Length: 402
Image 1: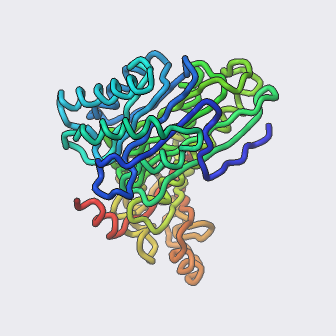
Image 2: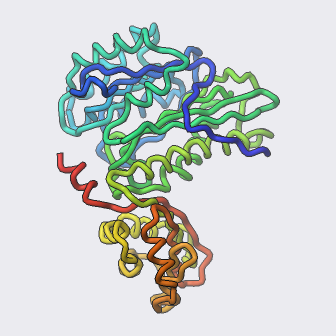
Image 3: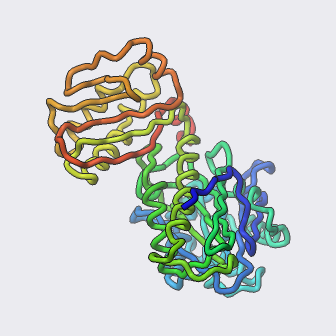
């Protein structure tokens, strides 16, 4: 199997159109705040994964219900207001957004999904939304993905996009997508929105399975601050225009499709970490020597979400002692006398005794913007896991004081 290459742009597969505009939800006229995504192919297959937070925004609840059909053709997105904790009026507003979009596109309302992102607890201002729909529809184009990626941003400093092409039965196929997210990011879905498009032929059950695998290995492996939001959504549309036989597990090219989908989502997830609110360092956390993979994962989540650790990572003094403290209370099996911690290949702690790492090498590493921390829990078990996170600085506090 030839591994696909990934481009940092979003080139929509044939049969998709997109647009982004400034509708007036945000005060800055230079900031796009609405996006529309459309498949021109009837019976486009759709799958989604959503926040695990029990408090869910009105659009999330609506989309979960609609995607039970496995079909969707359009997605309307607004930034600047999450439409969460807005009561029955928020539900009516989400329904109106879908209805007006369906009418403008000549679709059935059940074919239209809605996403919202922004502040929680604020009633939707529907006049800008209505205006935005009117502006978006005539601007839809096959080349509109970059504008669309701009229209979903909140505290992000830049859009996050990715595209790859691959062959299925000799037919060229494409997967592309974009996402937003910079804060309230924690494994098991976070305050992020991601939209994925493919012209591959995939039936709904197989697409749902592939999307879950890809999300588990990408968006569910990152953490900015340990918070899970009310609006998190990953939605994938497959319009089948590539023309090959339907993909499903067991198909000779299934692994090719899954690898491509995994790669696109992993690329987008890493871009979220690199754009974390106030971040200055990208940290790859690895655990080994755990009793099980689940125990390794639990330990890493505890370390990644400790603000004592994260603020320590922002500095230039090793934070391994703070990590050791977390391992002692995170609720997984450890051997307190055999824990080892390495920063890249530098031994910071070896079997619970400070290592003899070269001081100048440690200093240089701590001034870099990326390194790997490996935690051996000392049990001798086979469990291992990986998680991607970042440091936490004063800028994170300033961003979240609004």
